[in-house]
Length: 379
Ligand SMILES: Nc1ncnc2c1ncn2[C@@H]1O[C@H](COP(=O)(O)OP(=O)(O)OP(=O)(O)O)[C@@H](O)[C@H]1O
Ligand SMILES: [Mg+2]
Image (cartoon, rainbow, N blue to C red; front, side):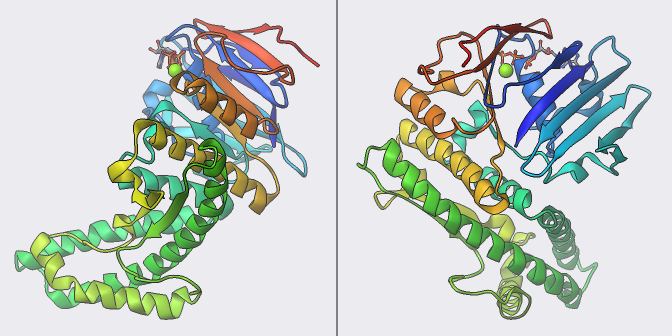
């Protein structure tokens, strides 16, 4: 899919931006603090995901502005669609979000329409950073394919919080241990479902990631990615999440109740699971070099894009915010070669980007929140 039209006004420092992006390559160039990431964020918000920068509602609207609006047209494999995302200072909580003219209850309802895969410098920490980041990556990737999934994860997280409060109340003698059963049954059903989806998704990731890593390491290293479950010892070949798996999950919660009561929180469950990456058999988390971590992170994101294509038969839009400057030349070339058939938005501070003569697209500069079009070699 690709964005056919984008207008942004009053979002952070962006002013009266209105342009037709190139179907493939779009380079957004500008000095620091001019609005490049803001423009990437505006596109990202139209995908229905939460801001990758955790922007507060009141900071979405530019200083001195009364309102902001993002209008985006895109074409997927079937049709043209349009999204409007706007808000005014008077009514910050009530965002006006429409898809093809139909008002949506919340921005998250846009999810699964405009699919984007974003790389930011923080994403380069995906393999090295906390398990939470990897779980978020998995959950976001799965919800792009299966819309109902994120609601189950949200519900699970609320339930775990409630179970943890109950554990503390039991410790204080304010509640009885029998009350746990109601929460455990629900957690087990949701947890089993999420475990299975994450396990199957990770298996797919591994197929693409192994191939890509073989290429980036020029055949010298082998990457292996697997799902680490704190509940199940083996998920291979299992499908009956509502019966078998939920039963086993419930057993595990019960076995751990005593320990959970001592700790005051739920220690086993999908909220503690992880993706485990191994390079030539060694745990990446413990042994990988900075460069290897970066390669793994890049590859996980590329694999996310390829899986989307496999599942929904449409490539996502790729948003590369300030990432190329963080990579050495060979990795820059590798990334670009892998996304040349997708629409890409790349931000950078200088124009030294390694595009070969096949590259064609549009280049823009951003200064003080305003966009200007430049000519790039076009074919
Ligand atoms: N609500 C707002 N109103 C006005 N300006 C804002 C608002 N929120 C953020 N900004 C400003 O937007 C400017 C541009 O931010 P942005 O992160 O897009 O810069 P950038 O071009 O990506 O820079 P860098 O190259 O350093 O990443 C910053 O100066 C920031 O202070
Ligand atoms: Mg930036």
